[in-house]
Image (cartoon, rainbow, N blue to C red; front, side, top):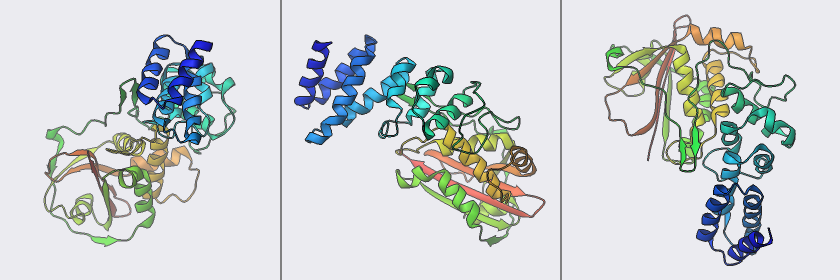
Length: 327
């Protein structure tokens, strides 16, 4: 133990970031979690002496949350940890841990609820007495999809988007016009959904509401000609949640729990539900009553995109979303 501490202290003193990264790999290979935690703590504390070793601390936190047994993984799940990791540690830790193993060692606070949401999305059954920071049910509802979940590894993360409709499902967009209307509630919900695309990356978003059809809403975005493919409401939820979980090309990922919350909020805004937290059955009914489409303006795909249109046939209104981010 003394040799390990001396090795860490020496590298920290010399601000040897490369050496610390190699040591992280060594400790993980040897499953030496106490040493990895000590490396993380020393590297994080070094900032007070002007040594910028936060990348080593961040890597150690990430590896502990991903690979270490629950007793060690939970020690990096405080509110100060994981600020610079590629995704929230609340999501990272859920990939290879059971909530039942984590719970007894987790410090009280909102992070417990976020970890619980991430574990529930991975099919885990949770205790009934949990505090819920998101005000939506932990368990998936019958009308929800199997959301696209990130997979974390030593090499980074993989977070594929839902499948696009097949080419054969697209039809030429009819030439229809509609009166543009102001809908700040839906605009706010969409902007909050993909905020990292805009604030932390190169993305931009356009949202338009019209009195008219989905085609009219897409046309109001400035799409002169294009195609529409009708998609299932559950598929629309999958796309909304994927976008909300993502950080876009360069932003930090926010996690599946936040993405799912954003999808619920967006549906509530489109359906003009004024109660929060919402009744889950009301969200499901509202989702099913809307017509959802993926639109294509014929432009090449450049990266992250969310091109949805939704119509409320009963009310006669429609919305179109054009969000894009490129590496």
